[in-house]
Image (cartoon, rainbow, N blue to C red; front, top):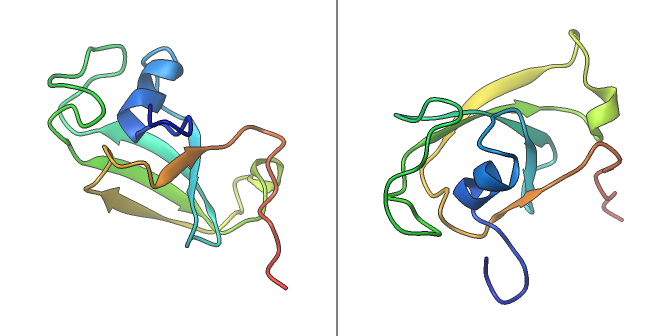
Length: 104
């Protein structure tokens, strides 16, 4: 955790009881991501290395083109992306009530 309370993707994995499926966003995205898996780590396993980077394994995320988690359903368009800097503090967690802010 950084001084402002931000968490890396790997720290968020621990915050979610070492399970996948948690939602994230990044300030430049106009979408919401759902963490699918961390390469080389089965759900429930410990990460190797030192926080916040944990050796920086790649993270696969389903990026949904929607403004809120509640809008996500089987018809929601998405693409799967690979994140290579999961130890950074760029990716913030979002909860089920999150709505993307509109740009004015």
